[in-house]
Image (tube, rainbow, N blue to C red; front, side):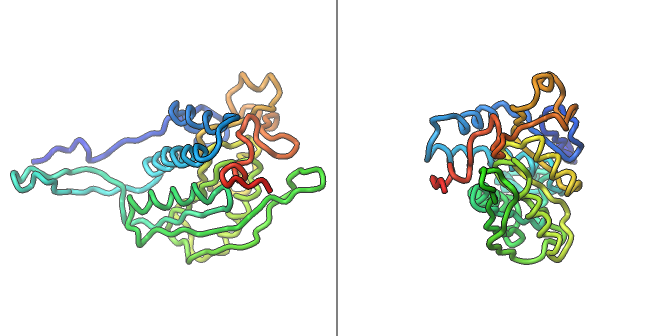
Length: 270
């Protein structure tokens, strides 16, 4: 006989209510919101910026692993096995035999992808974990408005068959970079088990673009910013008036947002 209390471990993330679709998950995490507000505050500088980004991605990726990764049963002897045959933990844990690929979209996504990669290596069989890389930048017109994204280099280390493919990128602003990256992986051999985009902040514009272009992609974020929406929108459930919601200024920066994270995280403003 043994205890069966952990044979199935229910887990559900705490999320805000919205109408963006079942693949969009905006967490309702007071600690994460506290630290994210500190990260975005005027007067927060390095090294505090990267420390907070690392902490927040630890919170976000753990939520994703708990909610989205497959599990399997184990019977794991503990140190007490030498004293009693009952020294065995029986329960459901994350299945370590899972392929996972995290994609670094330089430059704001470099640290988040490394944090994700290191955490995945501590949970899964490291031989099944990979990190790919894109060098990508916004393209702007003479007025400073974003008109697209451009890939200037990439390193994709193999197929993605039956893997969980993750895109950790702090700011889900226009969706241009993520859509371009997702489009690129359509030509990579193999079919991913799941595609997950992981962001600190997203805008309604981002959600519209990504869910339209890639409806099967799963989106996780710590916060939704729609600060430039009409006043009547603010008392409605997010997504109720999706076409009226606005989180981007005329230069496609997020409001309230936190500024350009590629610049802030690298102390490079060009």
